[in-house]
Amino acid sequence: MKLYKFKTFTTSCYFPSLGKDRQYMYGLYSAYGGITKIYWWLFRNCKLIRWINRIDEKDLDFPYTLIKEIDGTDALMSFNTGHPGEEQKISILGYDNQIRQPFFVKFSQKPEAMELSRNEINILKQLSGSGFTPALLADCITPEYVYLKTEYVKGKRLESTTLTKDITALSIRLSQLSLTNNTDTGLQASMSHGDFCPWNFLENEGDLRLIDWEMAAIRPLGYDLFTYIFQPAFLLFPKESIENIIKKNTIWIDGYFSSFDIKNWIDYLIAFADAKLSMGTQNNNIKLVKYYQHYQQLKNYAETL
Image (cartoon, rainbow, N blue to C red; front, top):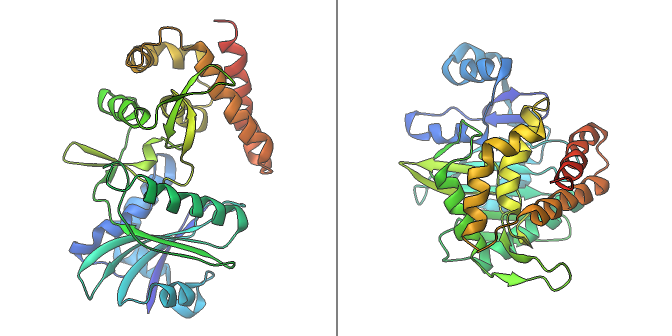
């Protein structure tokens, strides 16, 4: 079988030949700007570009055969090999030809990635029926790999990083799950998605759904909202000032915390920055050091408010 490879600076995607009814499989990748966005458009719309990047399944540099054996179905699959690092995992969108249904899969073999996938399986089971998470279809946990399979969530990834009323409302509803008090900090805490960013949202006819729950945990209120505000900004617009980021999002921050009768949210912002800094000290990727410096600047700024 031939697949077509789409290579970026940080990941590789492999797609089979896709008819009009299978175009959703291109949802494995989203280009947010620059020359990559142009190349992505050409790849999806130009047969010649895909033909130049064709590759036989026997020449793939990831465990294609093992994944097919674990899944055990007659399925058409597309693959995103993920960003290199300890948390790298393979994401898959597929179509089961027997039951005629699309699905989504994560396949992990690196220890940290396996731990995240195990957490996601637990979260999907814990929040089953809540309306927040995709339905878990199958899972397999072994010492060598973790495999989880969910329903396909239909929708397009958000093209804008701007916070909206609907996104804020969703973060409020999610925070209302398991609301509790943290006796150590005195802050209120609740369920948090953990990577509440535009690339983990899918929108379908005005309905927003969250995917990728591997980092979900109980955290101080506001963690998800602050993640949506600062993480895309620090990654995509690193020169924008923290003061300006906060200023243009204050209306959403005030609205979120007023839902929990909290008027002063500065301590929650500092707790968020501390949590991100803690993650940064555990990450050995030198390329991310400068990125996490933004959170130190955020903490320093918040402590002056």
